[in-house]
Structure formats: structure tokens, C-alpha cells
Image (cartoon, rainbow, N blue to C red):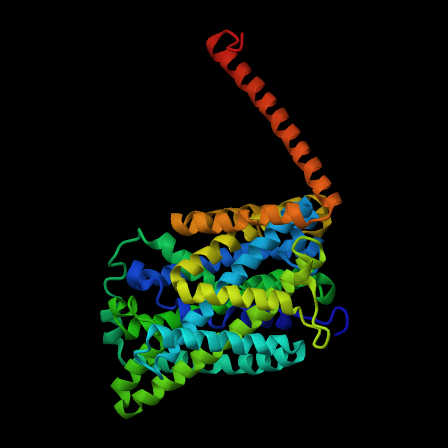
Length: 473
């Protein structure tokens, strides 16, 4: 691909393609048990937060067009150790998502094989992970071919579901009205937890902030593409969830393990009962293909992230080994897929997604702060969008909000996993990088001490004017 070859349509397509995938099959019913039909509002807000955070990524890409995303931006803005923590958080988020997909895969596969036992479900998860491991183990070309097929096949059933669903509800408006009234039967207390689960479906937008050197007029193209692309995704998600919530009562959706299949079957039972079984099979097959495609992409990317961090000296060198024949990072691949399989067998899908969002939130927060620092260093490389000055602040606030909405159990688990990276960095990083960390900590300590002295003096002067005497004497 030649330099400056990507235009507005290319980047917009990248945004849409990187977001829409298996997530909608997994997260479609999450908000129903917490908000009822009002889950639609959480999908809108989650999309708005995604726009803010994605624009912070775009700001970083304007200044530091580096391979590695958040990992590279944090290193550029704050140094090696913050960069490592961000890379480690991203790896944890992706690794957690790898554990989610086998669970979702077996849920939709249950349409074909109902009443599976624990051991049968576990065997299917093992076979699913083993297939994707082998595909990625034997080479990038094989993984790419499989991913191309799965990417093309995953969107068809979703478009079919949305179009037929809109036509069905237009023909049955009383059914939709019945299922949407009352709109918020459970109130709004569950909005935060629902938002966390739903936001996971928007993850992947950060891929749009690709190196600016390959984009025509990047200062305009990237932010406009992000806004348009996520706008398309929001509309697509709202249509899909409107159809689901309009077709099935929210109480049924709250217990559904395969919501799109259940909704499609309900539509077919009403219109053509003889085709209800075929409708369920079509949607379940689309879900299985889409989930496989998302997990294949995640498997490929996560293994490369661990490989890059190992090559940089932040993880054990063994993760930087390439297969002598296939040229793939086979050690990092085998480690991540084996451990993710255990998490998929013994974990629950809701908890895993919350841990993933917590880790993503940390990476997004540091990226927003990096956007602020990099923009100050290079004021000539600012985004051309309204309220440019406030974007990093709003993105940081959005990231903090996501982090604080995670339940205490998942927050502690996620924080513990992130903190595990500290001894890894101290043990494996080259000595000169540890020296840089020591100097940075001393510098930050000095800054905090100086800030404390200034704050103390300011408070003393303020109290002196109020009380007429110096409280420090």
C-alpha cells in the first residue's frame, strides 16, 4: 500500500468493521435485566463515550504515529514504565475477551445441541480454542485466510435480522408498544453496570487511529471517520436492540443465552411457523461464525502484542520466540490460549467482560492523558473538530466513569492482575529502563513535595487573611 493511500471511506470502514462482530451477539441482552427496554439509552451513551475516547486516540495518532496504539502513545508521553502498564492492561483486556468468546460460542451452539452437560460444553470449548490455536500456529497467511472468510460471513445474518425485524415490527406495532411500555420498569439504578457490559461491544474503535502517515489529510480524515463510523455502529446497534426488545419481553431477554436467535425464532413463529426452526439455525450459525471470527482476530492480535512487549524487554524473552518454520510467536500464542481456556471453563461471561472493561478503561485513561501531554508538546498537530481543547479531558472523564462503574469484585480482580505487571517489569526490563523508572519516581516525588509546600503556603496565607494570624506559627 502506497503512502497516503487511505481516504475517508477506508478509515470509516475500518471503524465499523473493527467494532461490529461477535460482541452484539454476546451483549445484546445484558442491559435487559438491569434496565428493561431503557437499555437502549445505555447503548446510546456507551457509543458517545466511545466517540470521546476514540478521538483521544486520534489526537495521539496525529502527534505520534507509532505502531502499538496505547502502548506506544503512553511510552511517547510518559516513558517506558507507564507505556508498559498500558500495554499490559491492553493485553489483559484482550486476553479476558479471548475467554469470553468460547463461552458465547457454546451458548449459541446449544441451539443445535441443546441440554449439553458441563463436560460436553467443556469439550466444545477445548475444540474451539484448539482449532484457532492451530490456525494461528501454522502461519500468518493461514490465519489471514480464515479471518477473511469469517469477516465476510459474519455481517450477513446481522443485516438480515435487522431488516426483517424492522419490517416485522412495522407490521406488528402493538407488539412493540406492549414490550416497550413501561420504558424503564426497573428504574435507572442499574444504568452504570449495564453501561459497562454494553460498552464492551464498542471496543475495537481504537484501531481507527492508525499511523497518520498512511492517511490522506489525517487531521481531518481520522476524526471525521471516527465520528461517522461510530455513528453508523450506534445506529446499527440501536436497530438490532430495538428489534430484540420489541419482539421479546425484557424479562425473557434477561434470561436469554442466545438473544438474537430467540428473537428471530419468535418472529418466524408468528409469520411462518414452519420456518421457525430454519430461522433459528440461520441466526445461530451466523453467531457461531461471527464469534469464531472475532476470537480469531483477537488471538492473532493478542499474541503479537505479547511478542512486541517481549522484544522490547518487558516480558520474558521466551514470549519473543518465533517458530523456526512458520515464523509465528508460538510461545505467546500457546500461553495466552491455554490460560484463556481455563478462564472460559471456570469463569462467567459477565465477570470476564467487567474485568476486560476495567483494563480497557485504564488503557483509555492513560491514552487520554497522553493525548493532553502530546498536544501540549505539539500544538500544531491538533484535531480539527469542535471542542478540540476539551476532548482529552472528556475522554479521561469517560474512562474514569467506566472504571468506577465496575463492581467491587471485578475491580479488585482487575487491579490485582494489572499490579502483577509491576514485578514483571522490574524483573525482566533492561537495567537502564529500571534506572529511568527510578529517576522518574524521584522526579515525581520531588514534584509532589514541592506541590505540597506550595499548597501549604497558599492555605496558610488564606487562613491568615480569614483569622488575622498565621496558623503555622
